[in-house]
Length: 251
Image 1: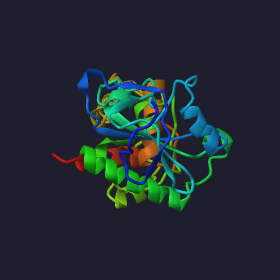
Image 2 (image 1 turned 60 degrees about the vertical axis):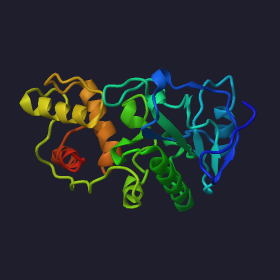
Image 3 (image 1 turned 180 degrees about the vertical axis):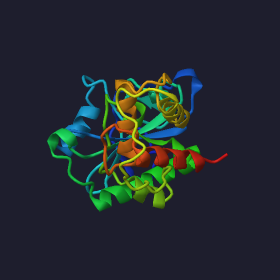
Image 4 (image 1 turned 180 degrees about the horizontal axis):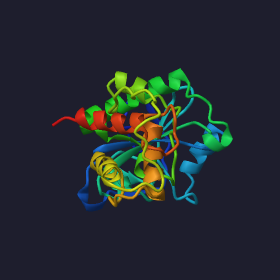
């Protein structure tokens, strides 16, 4: 690909060769937010455009707010990898991917600069308007690939995005040491928790047993929606925050 007009007016274009057609004629109806997880912004941008990497994203947002588009929104970028949401496993076909420059957990995980978040908000609002993406379909990479991915992580300000009209959010219920469901527990309460996580969209098997997979999904939920403590333990705060999220979904 030698070039294409940007879908987002404020983006500059640097084409990546790493893309394909969306399978089954699917139109994108979700946004997946990532962090780059590399030492520098330039290294991340170069990697996403390197044919040897076999990875890409539709957009990259730099720390200073610059937006680079690498793949047209009509095409299937290779940003999400193995995962699922709402029972659909080809995340790349139903989503638009946004990489946000941040070195990530293994390299210090700094806060996201305000100007970068402002740029992410403006980009997301424009995409959601043009593609009719619902708030509950603005997701973290860690939502679609629990355990395998943790980005953009617990420092990402989902509350600020939601206040600007991007994403689904409720105020997390304060942490309270009661109503705990944890590894090894079994029964109807665990089954109910798993059912609610699956209803919201997470890929989780409803077994009634709080196994390692359930702990991983609970941690992914916490990382996005109850970031004050990410421990994979479904305490009252986690369970009630999940219940309030579901109750606030549009009918």
